[in-house]
Image (cartoon, rainbow, N blue to C red):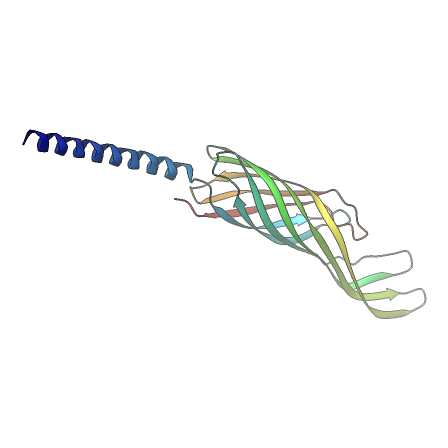
Amino acid sequence: MKYLKRDWTMYLSIKAIVIILFLFFGSALCAQKTNGNSIEIGVLAAGDEALYYGTYGKYTIPLSQNKHHFTLGFSMVAYFDFKGESEPDAYLKNDVDMRLIPTTNFGYTLNFNKIQLSAEVPIGVSFASTKGTLVNERIGFERDFSNNETFFNYGLSFSPKYKLSSTSSLGLYSFLPFVSDKAQSGYQIGIGWTKTFGHK
C-alpha cells in the first residue's frame, strides 16, 4: 500500500509537469506566430513625363516569425495615362498609354506597435503599351498608332503602414525605379489597404 501510494504520487507529479510543459511550449509557440501572409490592394499615381493613375496588388509572405523579419512578395501594378503625346511635327489623339509591371519583391519589415515599415527591392518587367491616332497637320494625315515595349524593371520600394487591427493596415506605397527606359516608366506613389491572413 505504501509503494502504491508513492507510485500514484509520482504519476500525478509527472503528469502535472507534462501538462505544465505542454501549456508553456504551446503558448510560447502561439505567441511567436504573429506574422501572417498578407494581401494588399491600393490606388496610386505615377510617372515622370506625365501623371498616371492606376491600381496595385501585392501578396507578401513572411520568411520568419520574428518581430522584424525578411519577406518575399509578388506584386502587380497597372497604371494609365490619357493625355495625348506630341512631337514637333505630329501628335497623338484619343490615345491610351498603359504600364503593366509584375514584380517579385525581396524585403525586410520592421514592426513597432501599430507602425510597420517595409523596405523592398522589386525585380520584374515593365510592359508599356500605347494606342491612339497619330496626326500630322503639316502634311495632312491621320493613321492608327500602336506601340508595345518590354523592359527589365527593378528599384527600391518603401511602405510605411498603420495597423488598424491585428489583421488590417492602412499605409503608403512608393517605388523608385533604378532603370530608365524609353517609355519613361517612372516613380509610383499610392495609398493602400492590407489584409493579413494566417494569424494564430
